[in-house]
Length: 194
Image 1 (cartoon, rainbow, N blue to C red):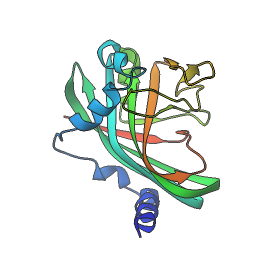
Image 2: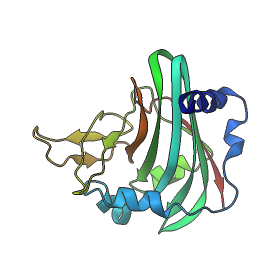
Image 3: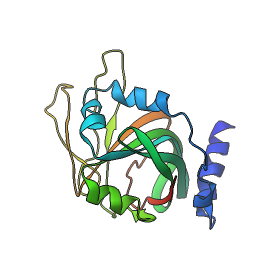
Image 4: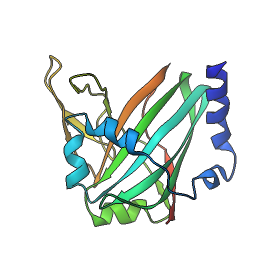
């Protein structure tokens, strides 16, 4: 039943105006931020980045045709500056559903301004660094290129080195589900200033 609900929610993103469902009141995302801060690879970016966007839950599902939706908040200097929502519609080889948290770091004012201009979209080759949280806050990596992030990690479960690409760096922390295809390409973001 949960999979069906997740799939239905994800497919709703294809409807016009799905981005209008973004929050209009500041919400407490401290739990999600804390989860990312406990990961050694991610933590330093909270203090060094110009700003960041946090999505506590992004739901994604599909069977041939898929979709994803999530709402979040944009931060600068640790304060919420606005609200954002993400939608994605995809066609191709995919099956399943998943839920994940996502944080996007902005390296500088230019990257922040581009994201908060109102309508931002990742390129077709964008990907993210997939991280996992454990008691020791170890990380694993996946993906890595273009507008998302690139990684450098040697085998054996060592910490990943994440780098900005085009001023952006994206980390994804899985919450549950299983889906073949975990790219962020084609994700569209809307922004509404506080």
